[in-house]
Image (cartoon, rainbow, N blue to C red; front, side, top):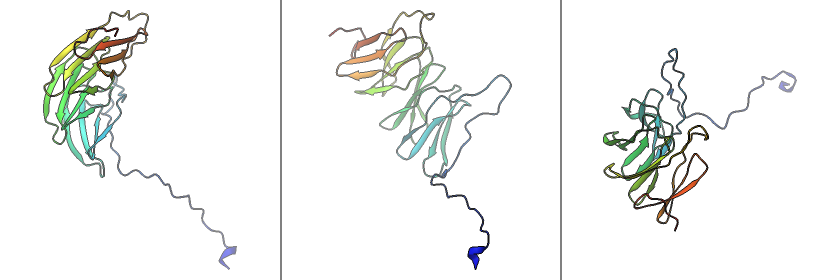
Length: 195
C-alpha cells in the first residue's frame, strides 16, 4: 500500500565531505583585499599554510587543530619546502625563513631584498630561489648563509614579471628568466656555464 503514497525526495549523499575548515582571511578593511596565492603543503601529518594576516601556521591534518602559528608580518606567494626537521619558505617582503617543523621555532631569517614568488628548490644541502627582481640565490639549508647570487639585467618594460622555480640537473641550476632566456648556472659558483 505504501507504494501509492508520495515519498520525500532525498538528495544523494555526497561522497566528499570536509573533515574540517579554517578561515585564513583577515578582517576586510577598506583598501586591503586579501588574495591568497600560496598553496598549502603537507609533511609528516601536518598541513602548513601562510594566512593572509601574515602568519605561517601548522595544523594537524586529521582534525585541523592548530599546532603553531608564527607572525612573519608578510604574505606568501609560494609553497613551503621541507628539509630534515625544518620548513623553509619565502615571503613577499623578500625574506627566506626556516622554522622547526613541530614547534615553529625560527632557525634563521635571511633578507634577499625582493619578493619570493616561487618555492625553493632543494639539492645537496642547498636551497635555490628565483626572485621577482630577476635574481637567483643559493643558500646553505642548515645556516641560511648566502653561498652565491646571480642577477640578470632585464628590462621591466618588455617582460611578464614572474619568477620560475629553479631546476637542478647534475652540476647546473637551470632557471627560466622573464626575458625568455633559459640560464644554466654552475651549482657551486652561480656563474653562467656553457658546458
